[in-house]
View 1 (cartoon, one colour):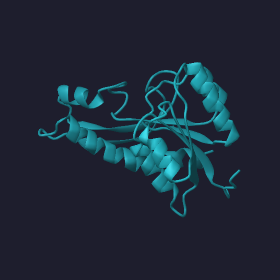
View 2: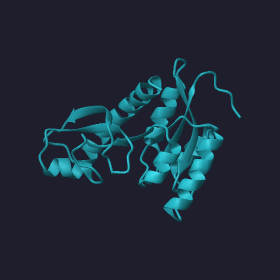
View 3: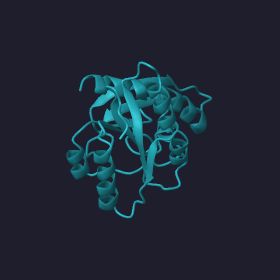
Length: 192
């Protein structure tokens, strides 16, 4: 087991390419960072983010989502084994059960590409454009059993231009996601 002098141990749950995973890992490598990503778990064994983690020698596991119970039990074993202090959901496209949240009993953060409580769930950019919103953004919040409803930790907004399409908006929001996720992690870990 790797000894971390005073650094909090973070696990990141992903489903895909892991662009937020990359920004979190990059931040964690800063000399004065108070946390280190030591575990990556994906419900998709083919997720690119797992290859990225492997390249950086971060412990990683693709746990096929045969059933939520199976996935959560396996994940809890890994979380316990590596003594994880916090889970960050980063493009993790599954909903964790109340039982899992209670059993882990430590902070679980999620990033959502809208200014919650607006546009919970999917297709946030399409919905913001359809409603002619002036702003879109990203929100980091605590995970609860209710989808995208936990206490908000950090939010940042971006202006929607008349010329913005879904792809333009997605790029803008992703950029601020990468900026605010590490800040939210530090904010919560500092208060533990």
